[in-house]
Image 1 (tube, helix red, strand yellow):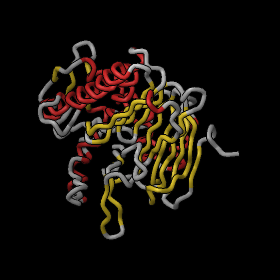
Image 2 (image 1 turned 90 degrees about the vertical axis):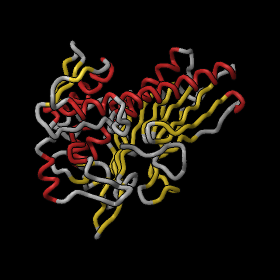
Image 3 (image 1 turned 90 degrees about the horizontal axis):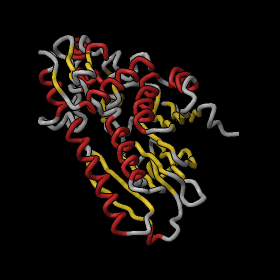
Image 4 (image 1 turned 30 degrees about the vertical axis):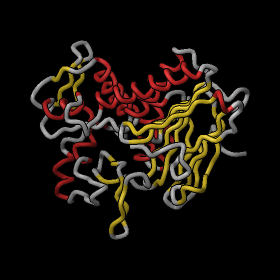
Length: 324
């Protein structure tokens, strides 16, 4: 549910001069349906290459486990069979689905992986959206409480037919966190890992922060804010990522679980926090909640800050980021 980073046409741009560029190592790849970017400092090119390759392998592994596009993935197996009875999955996947339920509870259902029970009816590439009748029929299956996770048995089941889940609002952030943990375990102390609109930064840039620029929703060459960060995660959700316009209405991929329709009131939401799993989920949640309720949620979460762009273009900041 996120857009690309490290390209001026996309919502976040890591900005910094690059000291001793020969020892900064950068690589990009297309994984998880988006652009993966890894940048790290290492004085051994061979070790740097091995660490980068480990990150990309981890991204492929998470994608193979959690992709709803791959029919052989465990997530696809859940969607196909969990209404019939418990489906055995890896403890890792069961744990993340359980964590998603925690975000659903914290956000009053604004984050809900069962949105896919209606969301699958949208095709943004083909410019197709469901009818009112299709949305009404699908909404009966949209409720995170329809998903029962047994962590002890490592199984997932649905309480009724028609339920589908999609981890697009949390899986990329989770993969980024996994990748940063791998780098830290290898002794890397200065790095950034990006998957679509989710980034996590490890350390600083030798006495200076990494600077993250948030793009303007209507112009990929303009930025609404530049934020210095160290040892932090940042995620952006926007209505300009996967969308089409029809009859003056924008249909985009951030679906409000309570309506089955594209959420309104905001153009983009950027969340800053300690880990990308959380910033990923909360950026989607705030977008669904809208400006007032979304900022109220952020003020209740002491470790998070936010930059919001309303539909009228006004930029809003959480109290921890409010410019003087």
